[in-house]
Image (cartoon, rainbow, N blue to C red; front, side, top):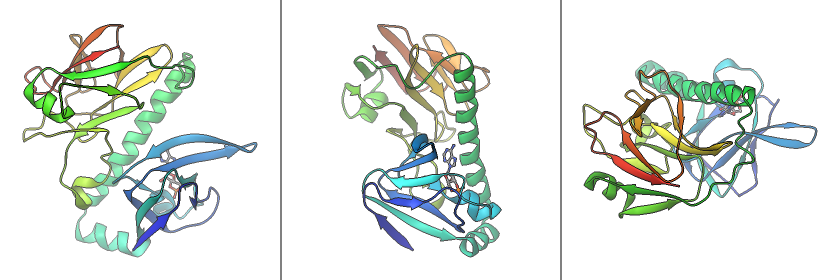
Length: 248
Ligand code: CMP
């Protein structure tokens, strides 16, 4: 079943009960918790991402609220449909798990950042340009270069739509790739946070190479700060067709 929400409309409310999950088919959703009348952002979700699955599965009250950030359409999955789907195709559970892992990684990074005084608030990015250094990279950008105006700027592999391909990949830039994949569905993001601009790995299989240093994959590094001026970014292995220059 599809439902539509106008910009600003509350979709679900923290503390209430609910047994449905939602997949965003178009639009954006703000997930937040409230304290002393103030909203604290947990995530901004976009097309193909899911929310509300926690209460659907563990039958506890909604852990956060969700509101449409713009006019938004969602597909609603109820508990019974989810049970049916997971019985007929257990790989669906993997997809749910991966989404939870990405959230956990993000939370871990946020906790670490808070401990060392890095904050997503308070850093204003100067002009950030991304340019392709290979034909594939240029084609993905739709031209030689592009200015990045939105942070985090998420990059990942282009997948087929539908339940398996579409769920949980939510990117601002999609890279086409063939097996064996260099690019993961949720590969990395460019983030603006104190004290600068970062390449943050999103749990990718191979990671990336930033100015000759590895981030993500087996490197043990989850993020790397970009230097003022030019930075070379290779997404995946050194032979990857996706090489970019990021200029700050
Ligand atoms: P549920 O608890 O059913 O209702 C609120 C939903 O917000 C929750 O399921 C998740 O889908 C979503 N949610 C909660 N915390 C986060 C988070 N840290 N990042 C992204 N989504 C979240």
